[in-house]
Image (cartoon, rainbow, N blue to C red; front, side, top):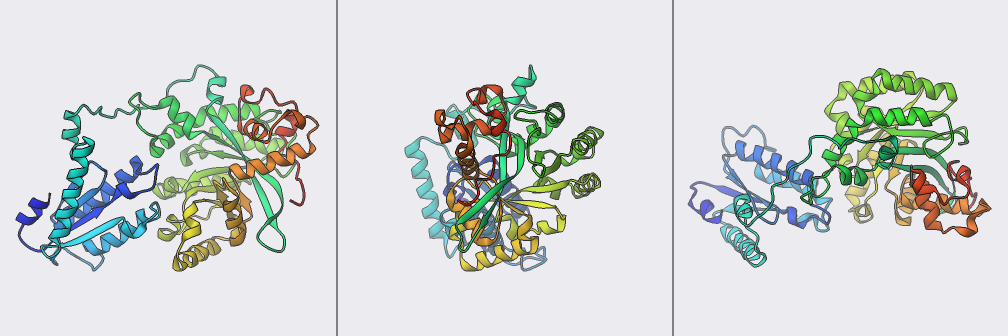
Length: 440
């Protein structure tokens, strides 16, 4: 790679995207796909070549001098470096170190030092620098399944589901939680369970895009299961829930406009159940017309559309407000606590434009997430910490609480199967959305 750069005449640049510096469990398959697509396009525009190293880093060697094909100042390797740093930097503990750009031949020594270091690491670990070398060393090619494995019975399918409860948390006088009440129950396919059921046998790590594809293929059996259970009690039923307690379901935009989904909406209206349907931002942006049709279908039925899969990095690049969703789920990340002042201000402006009353802080798995959300003015939360708070509220009023632990109550509430809840001696309370414990 370095020798090729030295032999190539003209002003060249070497751009390195250090995917190996992403925090675990990254880099994920979607990181590699997005990075390769961006850099391949840049290589085509700038008469370049892309190299994939054994540690996951991608190296682009390309022309740096201005050319007639370059149509704007943004069409430049330096601008590409800035864009890649913004896109991937939020996933790294050192965002400024995610991308290196060296101008050749003046900075050739840095490229040679980097290449020499990577070659030494690969030799010590026994890993090759190319797919061909890895294959010669006995690496097993990844073969992904075309669709989910079939399900023998509804109980088998139910084992893939997870329940989560969203809550409204209020504060009084500071940023500490003061009181809370349950708002909605979310029924969704568990990504971990679905991947465990459908993953290839070669140990390939979870691919979120493939999991989403699988989940959408299972929309119909999910709808059938919810329709059958909705009017009664139990983990998927809404009987006994508070009158303002809603049901949230994850579906694809194309499923929402089907007649099958209209039947679910009619059933919800007939039994007085409010419903919200979650759609990922990626899917909404990829199929805007289908998303508009899905949003219109929901609003005609008097229900809400929820936009999910929104990270704080996403809010820096897109304007989800333009999709006019009723609620938006912002994914919590510990990196939100370390944002620089300009980034904090930009995030606050983006959330303010959406409206804090429409924001749900997703993955609020610890107290720091809840406190951060409250400090920003967010009131709706979903996550493990919220589940623990709800379990504590149940145990304060449950006559059988002496025989249970807080962890057991939390796990049983998240389970959609009879086996996962069989030791609960107060299932009516478990499924009621939990009484509000009042002041905390």
